[in-house]
Length: 354
Image (cartoon, rainbow, N blue to C red; front, side, top):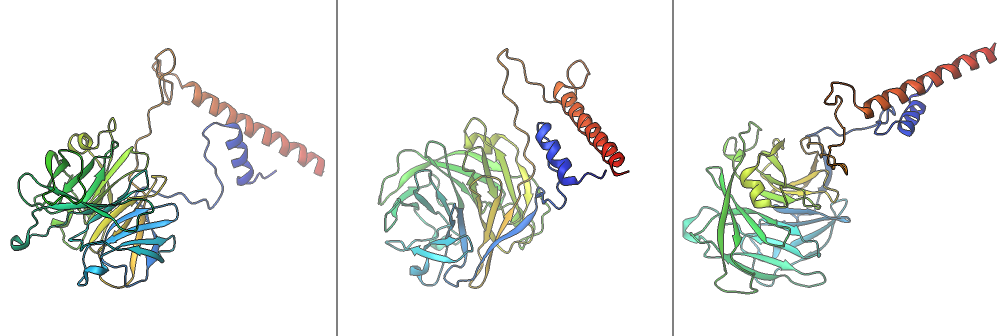
């Protein structure tokens, strides 16, 4: 008797805990694999610098336009079709990142400040668009040591905004406000430096070559708060957040790299709602803009909780005594039983056929 792969898969997954389905043709995304999420074909939605993935589609912002009224917050459906946009009550200077807080508030980081000494900013800003509001409100901030260029805004678990600067030398600085944000403040709430982050070396090709591998152009925190990612023009670097502390994680821990090769001025990155993938966008001029979906570099398997006695649950293939673990022995035994039953069924059917 010939048993189909689908039937064997059913038996294994039904009887063996943790067994993987063996259905022919099943697609499994590999770490680093890229696919096209959708393509924006609307000239109003160009030069994207920030992105959020929502259950119904995407939130996106652009960072510049010869017409200030064209710098807006865009709402796209799952096929990248523009459904609506929201303008700023006064001209936004250089919006570079966007995030969506758990309460539904949209935060836009108006923190860009390109290296032109004659027009450097005295203050930067975040705009907050509350759920149901028709227009965002500005909250100004001021660096303690003069202007910085930045393109990344993160949000801590307690709601504190975190700004990561974009440094040519590759040693990005991390700033947070010294106190609560103040709406429409002229001078801006002072910022304080709380750390630095230096990304690992990379060889990923990009339009700026070695410079593009050092410049932090965007970031995001996963919806469950367990992961944080910073991107450059070449790569996405992801950390596992330690004890809910994003700043400590960025300064002290080592990330995993997911290459984003040959993206033309890639500046935006966001997590999917389930946190399983990144979606990126490029700061491209008018014309089609592709949103790309990447599978992050392989994450470590979470450690199991300790048992009531305080001992670690057995999960490895070999226990401390050098013998196969109970789980593995059970899986092997059940698999062997399934194969024996299949063989007996085959013998019976062949005899009946005679």
